Length: 218
Image 1 (spheres, rainbow, N blue to C red):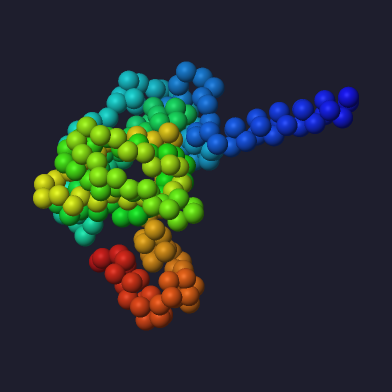
Image 2: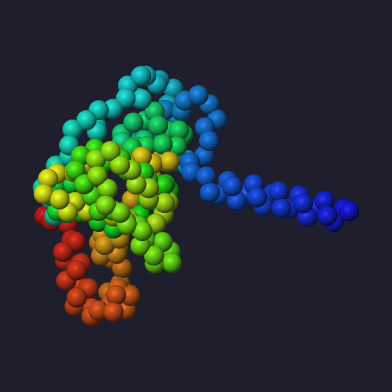
């Protein structure tokens, strides 16, 4: 009987551990903890500042369309804890993504959050790829929603002739973004050429050419 009770306790503890691992940001332990973005103290998140005001919970950063005159034809405007300090410990954030006709939000991941997009204007072709290399894709239009599961590679493409825009919601105050191409070809220090050549089945000269395209413009 004692062994059975011990086994049950072990199962409960393992379950609790697994649940804690799949949650998004940690739960808050007080009403507010407005981020002190200038603090030299490093914690998982940001330390609280003592002089919080209503302005710490406000932003108009998503009010205007972003400029899409860049090589991708899209722009992501974040409304995370770095822009709204009052989001600290609350486990949520938003972004606005604007797309020119033909604009692409390149394949990327958010390591700390699931993403939900709501189409404000236009139409988009969107999709994500599972760890089993299965593509889930959909054409979405104004008023519709699509979900990108946490950590999976995903993209959005405006194949229409008019601009498009979405509001993206995340279950993290700072979801993080890793653009696949930029991460691999513009890392500092750089990823070794032979690693990329072998991974992509291409020559080192092609790798160097790709890296030159992602190099910072002077």
